[in-house]
Length: 388
Ligand code: NAD
Ligand code: MG
Image (cartoon, rainbow, N blue to C red; front, side, top):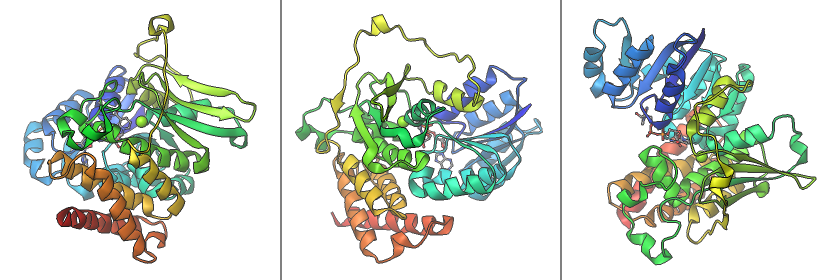
């Protein structure tokens, strides 16, 4: 039996993972499930899958979680330290599907046990890609991409020589506002931004899709995951979301990964890797589809894409600054304290201010330094928003 843990089990990726795992109850032994505050869902899944332990991130929810699981023999715990301890429990395959920088530490702990880490939490790669990869190498652990674009690139690279890669193209749906007139963007609301044309995802990543901060994070994730020069990474808008990424080789061939927008494909590929197993996803009818279209990704509409390039050029810990500032700006947008276009301004100003503080960004890649820079970037972003 494969031992499995799922961090962020109550979210969109977590629930899709559970959907796959619950279809083969005898194949898996569930070690840990974690959630944030939704303890009803967490307890229900922990019972259904017979988990060893259920952990909620929010300590104020622990009493309720305990009550919900009373008499089941399932252990319960809460808080950041409990998450780390749960990640230290031996498992064969661990899904990292917490949203935000909070996903980094549990993922690193899982890698230290030698577990295969299925990485949906792109923020881990953006904040600390070299640390994640180095931790995996040091413990003989594998990191497998779950982000659909990165799973697509990963699959297109099977059996290929990285030296023959000429370019990597990741696609973007363009999100909720791809057809809006530019001048209307400033007045877009969180409710409007949280409606995705193709994918059904968590609220935060859906808004990040509308602003293309999601794609900006993914460009950095591509660089870190595949060790690809940033100049070879392109973004193209593809409103149908059927092609997730393409890899171009030096003979002119472009290998595209085509499939319906269903995260269970990428999750299932990581779950069964290196095998391919039947998955309950829709099979595409190309004739019905008719046509696939592509547009340029305009950096005026989506300044996040330009910022991602600047972050990659700066290197060091600037990815952690970028992500933390983005998380704070997103919080403020959701709380209606800043407007939609204000998010990119806040992130850009935070990057400028923090990189002006000599040396910090290049202090070296460690979890402590990532945390320190993350903290500073959040404070700086908050200050900028107060001043504006
Ligand atoms: P979500 O908001 O639906 O779920 C997030 C999960 O993390 C929930 O279980 C939540 O309770 C938990 N959580 C939130 N804050 C936490 C904290 N501070 N500490 C511990 N746990 C916390 O998000 P999602 O859409 O499932 O996305 C999860 C991750 O996967 C993100 O990094 C996202 O970018 C990435 N991803 C998601 C999709 C998708 O289709 N949803 C696709 C590609 C990548
Ligand atoms: Mg993606």
